[in-house]
Image 1: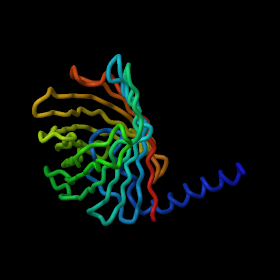
Image 2: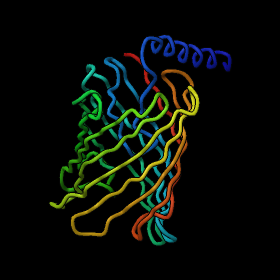
Image 3: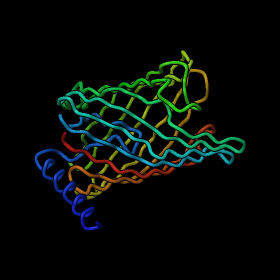
Image 4: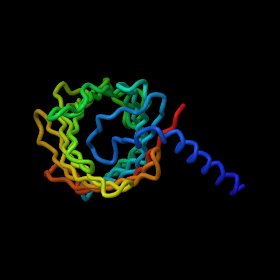
Length: 251
């Protein structure tokens, strides 16, 4: 039985490796908070899976186990997206767990890099209020969007940033989102990044954060990652850590 399972796993990896030989390596939107401007290849299903722990303060923490971003490439300029998260929210007096409202959306490429003009994409999602566990259901559909941009600095380094906004349930005021990250290819398989990002509400105080992490590419279709960060503002979480595994296959 063990030999059979091992053979199936090896066949799966070999099958996906062959499919990826004529395509660029997998491009993921994790582990950093900066969404990349690249589209999942047409006909490929890509799953970006993560587990995260966030220490909000001495009285509360949150576990995402797992968070899954599913991407499907329609053509070279457009992909469909679905985000699902199982959350465990702990406080001193209460514990809630279940599925956050599921988000559906898309990413579309707008501009190819040309000199000082970055590769640019537009990403949009909307949270479905009833597609959630009871403790996390919302009253309203809540949208979010970002413009994702990337400059090539060298063969090994890129500078990426996002600008966008998101809305909380029942709030007319947006929370503006920004990210700024630089990624570096240490080797052909190992990469690293450092990032500054934050959330800036119209009324409440801003939440600024810093994180860093690494990715390791097994082959063109399979990648693992590890990241950690800390809050820079009074309202930010104390710290957070995450580990993930992303893969794609043709369907």
